View 1 (cartoon, helix red, strand yellow):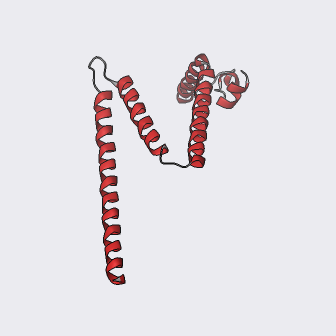
View 2 (cartoon, rainbow, N blue to C red; view 1 turned 90 degrees about the vertical axis):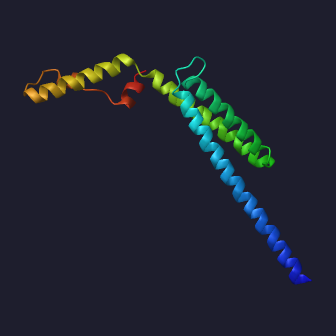
View 3 (cartoon, rainbow, N blue to C red; view 1 turned 180 degrees about the vertical axis):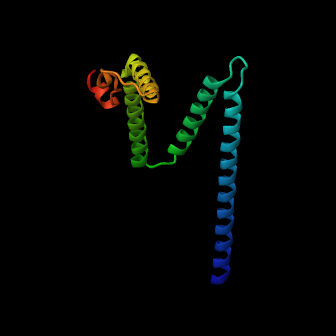
Length: 145
């Protein structure tokens, strides 16, 4: 009887593992097909489609999956997930703020200076204000503002 019980539980475990593997394959396939559909939508030139619509659809799908998965988390892990989301939001916002703080005129001036210096180096001429025309490091440019 004990041997039969062990064999039965082994078969149940095998079936459970098999169902889990099939579920993972289905999930992976759904993600792949969704991604392909998102790329098609992003590349579409039809009204109401295209990149903005693809981003909205992707965000909605990811939020739905995260919500579904988070319902299966215990309270501590759910709190950790919320914290991770807030941290990611802050980091992205700070990154965007940093990018918008860079003065585009300085970027164009630096690009012009690089092009000018490159062409001067090729022609063998130099200018008296070479130090003044050098592009600044981003850190230094941001520190001035």
